[in-house]
Length: 393
Ligand SMILES: *Cc1c(COP(=O)(O)O)cnc(C)c1O
Image 1 (tube, protein in one colour):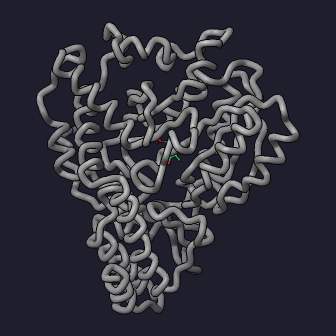
Image 2 (image 1 turned 180 degrees about the vertical axis):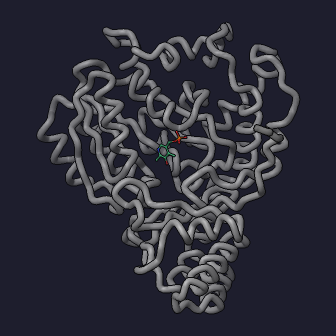
């Protein structure tokens, strides 16, 4: 079998992640590899921590990227904070809350599930009821931005309720960070994790995390060892900690960290608020186009994420055929439904660098063209003018 160099095409990535990576970040990735203990690299790491503190709006000294994808940030939070026997309230309104439950169980914790319909935000009343019913709960965990459905929960309120009942909080901000407000200090989030390939538009494979003093106190009072050697923060901090001797723990993904540094620099140049506003504005433009084509969103307006648009697949339309035509004919990737929503929805991402006017026009134009060609009665021109009008508002 002949094997050649792999030359991927240039695609437009409008799925649930990875999102479009701008050339500037790809260029950073290709800079010369230096040692992970090189003094120049170590000073870049210090800047990286400051940039992440800005992105998270967190003063926490323990703010750093875990050397693996978002799922590893999730595990880092759970394995360090959950001890055998700990009761953990997990709010689930989609796929990722289910993974939190898995994490709790594997740490020997006892999950208490608070379930909401897929496509809805977490209901604070249900959380409060669970906190009252389980006064021995130690931790509350929830997903801020459920990428499987496009629903956004009210993190500030949920964290407030958890604290009122003396629980620590673990928050999944993989899809929210950089796209919608995430205010770790103001909201009092104790442990948070994110990913690089969603609204930060960096390459996949890193997971920024941040822990406050309350979380560190729980970790330092553990009576059992953290079961994961790789994710034990006591050991990781020998490499990442401030004033640490920078002892070898694992070889940091040097070039990927250059890319994250560049991505966060771009976010700081744009300004967090401007980035949030851009995501919202572009969401409204995409929505105008999709609705003009007769499509409906599955999440109620007040709970919608601007960076992840989940719409029902029109009747008599073959999901996989449409998505593969978009990919093959237009180099455009949109997301399929996940879990219970497989085959029922498309998830159209407007994350980070992918959240731009030309992507919206491409998506609405291409989707309109493919659906019309398959016999749907769609006026693509009208949909495109609706987008243009919304962009000019
Ligand atoms: C993507 C995602 C993850 C997992 O991140 P990976 O980088 O794929 O491991 C976790 N939570 C949410 C909400 C996500 O969208």
